[in-house]
Length: 126
Image 1: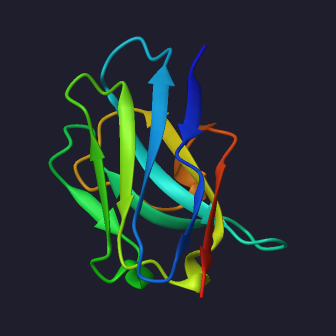
Image 2: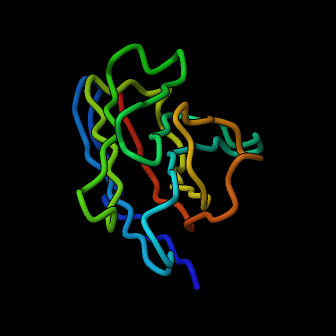
């Protein structure tokens, strides 16, 4: 059974930084790819960043503007999202997601992922 568990929730001030983690277990091999999404109350989830199966390629949403970095450990047991220069509009619940398979260009749409964590709250105050 595949499970994803996010951690690193927190409250920071505008301009601050935060690192989210996602512990991954249950995949039979390392042949899977991952992403971070976020959701505002009453809105659909939107992609933040994704990483290819090999970890070589990354894709980011336009709003990231170079402020966030997605990474994974070598064993692919953990996915990370380092967020810098945070803004109040980054306040949302953040989710990690994964799908089994091999991709070179990682997608960033919710339909492209099968497994989801329960999310972790990030609050940025002005």
